[in-house]
Length: 88
Image (cartoon, rainbow, N blue to C red; front, side, top):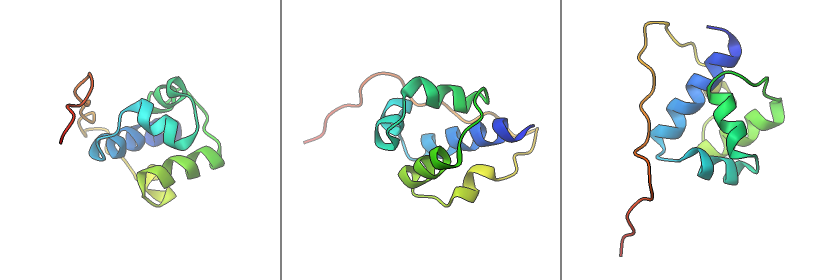
């Protein structure tokens, strides 16, 4: 797995664990939603400032996005699509 794929894998894993959609993550990081999707697919060569912004939104150290991924590890789950129910 190359570095772009590792970053994308970890980004998706952390985003799903926080319950954030690509759109919410993108808005909070001030980047385009489709860019987040391309990062998660390993199709983008991400800048350091973008990595810092994403890590900040996810409340993790930048190094968490570079964590080694075993090739045998299952792909991170997807969030359920659609709007979340409102509470209150």
